Image (tube, rainbow, N blue to C red; front, side, top):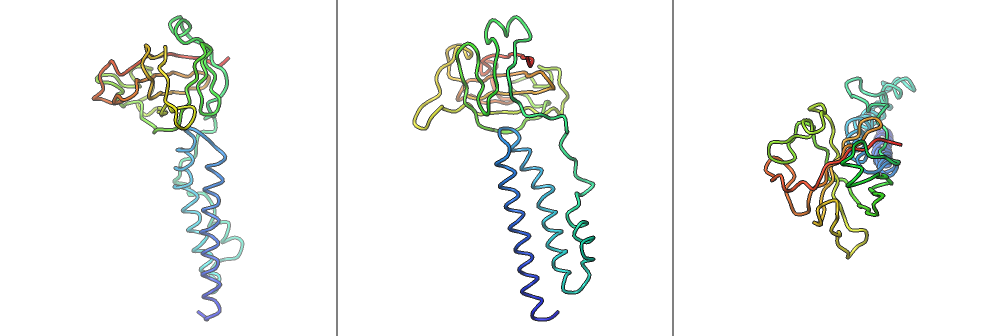
Length: 223
């Protein structure tokens, strides 16, 4: 390899790395809430390996083994082993009405606006992503999300932390939590239905949690 080819190869690899990082930033800015987690997984599993393949392709340019544009197309092609996101998986947004009498009486309707849950009883929960749980996981001792909601064991349950509306403030007590402070909300979004669990602040959510950690459970259907 000639001395002139080395700087060119290094520059192309650096460019591929910079483009991969830029794609990651733009992709995460374009989505919100639970999709940030899914987006990171997609970038980690697809975009980063693709950037590596582009870097390898660039490294073969000086030797003539890069196969021109056809080689570049191969480098950026999606790995067939990667499972793409379901095209029917829509972002959780819009207004949802109660599906049963208990939900109608205690919670009424709810609107999902960005990271906020806005109940028509006048309460608004500001949230941020916590993690994704599987349906088979227990949210309190002896109860799983799948069992509670009749969902598959591998269903993705979105857990969000309830946070103050502004820096320096605290989360207010809520009638939806029996007058206690809510801490975590669990969401299962299935087509036009959303199931919701709310847990008290400063309690464990998991198999070691006491049943009293759960504030309540509600079901809504998109209007």
